Amino acid sequence: MLLDNKKIAIIGGGPGGLTLARLLQEKGLNVKVYERDENRNVRQQGSTLDLHEDTGLKAMQEAGLMEEFKKYYRPGADKMRIANKDMNVVFDDQEEKPQEDFGNEHFRPEIDRGPLRDLLIASLKEENVIWNSKFTQMKPFGTGWEISFENGTTVYADFVIASDGANSRVRKYITDIQPIFSGVTAVEINIYKAEKNSPNLWKLVNDGKLFALEEGKTFFCSSKADGTLTILIGIKTEDNWVTNSGINFKDKSSVAEWFKKEFRTWNTDWQEIFETNEISIIPRPMYHFPIDQYWKPLPNLTIIGDAAHRIPPYAGEGANQAMADALDFYEIFCFGNHETIEDAVSLFENKMRSRMEEITEDTLKMTDAMHVESNLQFLTDFFNQVY
View 1: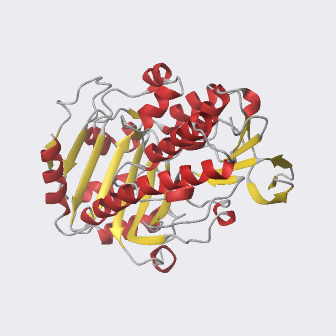
View 2: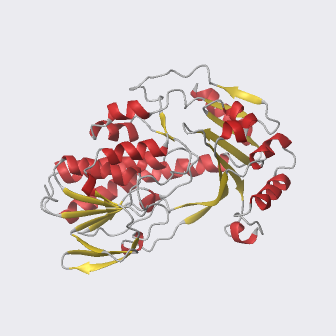
């Protein structure tokens, strides 16, 4: 194999990076994941992930982790309701979802980010995940790279894989192509112990997912097994809205006041989310990379996941495409017949970019459709066609 006897460094321990590490480890390659989190017990924010048959689930199968996945996924968590601004449910598939239908392309089982990360970490040798390793810089050294971390350590790698997310620090060593603002900003809110702290919304979500939308605004909510509700409130904004809005996102009352005004025509019961102090709030402007982006392949560095092709979350493709990247890299480098590493990198990156052109275009269409005046009609029509 091309990477035999090479030191491989994966920067970032998200679903894509960890999946790739597992696949390469099982082929006997020398691979290390460098993760910025202090340890494996750091709380994983964000909503649950639905894995798709031809991407995330396929990667789980190839990694030999499907049985572990089945232990930790959440049967029924893919059930979904759509509500209008008055909290009236207009679409409900909560009684129709099969409990388990692996092999069906329409079955997208849900798993919380924490358990998914935990099972991937557990599948790796302990010495193959290096914690408290926040990347700062790297520089060419011989035929590889000398990588430096915030904790003062440096390591050498023959081959580096950037898997450090949407705000990647490694991407600049590959390309200077900048992200494009999608026109939508989301405010992510996590309510802990939500059954107690936001009981009405917890009941409405009913251990599944809820889309509430009207007037070009979205209120997406998903439950987690630990009792957290993750809410993503999306609105159309200008690029610099977070800075110029005057909202102090570290102050719950400031965000609550904005929500009360922005959603003034909505049922006031939605404001229940601000009645607890057991809450976290993070503004998230939504960006994407150009659909036709291109960079020249390098012989000792490549990129996967959001670092390569960040997109808004409204089509549920982010983690799935990162895991598809991992699978493509594994198949090309471990089973392909290539004369040089650079040839393999070129094939991998071309395949990844080609796949992401369609995914990015579809995601942007979905993002736009979810944030127009007729968004409620659009989404109900969409799911009525699916089901």
